[in-house]
Length: 119
Image (tube, rainbow, N blue to C red; front, side):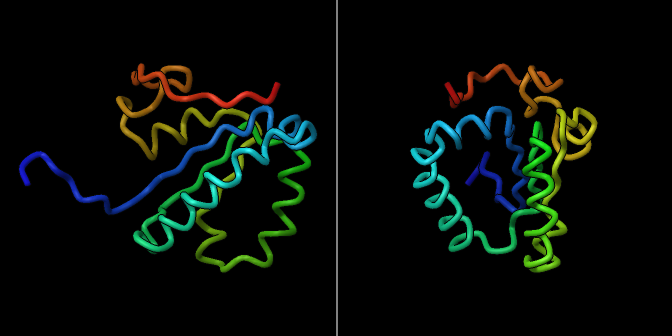
């Protein structure tokens, strides 16, 4: 169809700011069913399409845990996952077009994305 583009790769960025608070106040558990569904759909319908998973504003404790977990992951999968303690503005611009990157992360995209709260 005209105007349609085939999805041939997924680059996933996630802001982990507030994740520890969300875990301790148990609000994160409300999001897990959605995340599980998304992972299942991607694995089922788009195997091997995930090119990069970039998690940023990751707490030090999570980075330490990931170093242990990484040893148990498939090397190809582990190679797709990147963790940053801050916001990797440069990495955003390496992997995404500026018009896709939200303004708060250095791009020009002004779409009002849904926000989660750890409060």
